[in-house]
Image (spheres, helix red, strand yellow):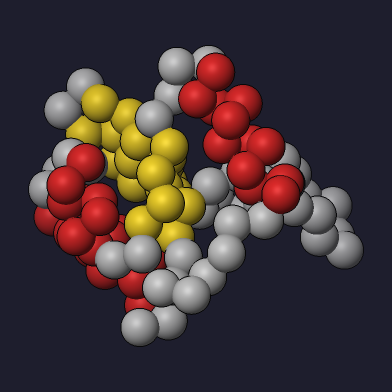
Length: 94
């Protein structure tokens, strides 16, 4: 499965469960719009008073150094961050 297919399955599932799902656009663009900071996980969901940041990767996908740094920063702020290589990884967390 591609990263976008995994991400879509996660969004669809979480939406069906009644979660608020935010897809984050991280990094910079060539036009004037505000992006999330580099390294921000792909998805942020809120379900049943729980919040979860999700970095979506394929089985072979690697987390970059800037992503690792952001994950650590979020964890230090008391946030839960997971790397999801399939929908099952998210189901286990929620």
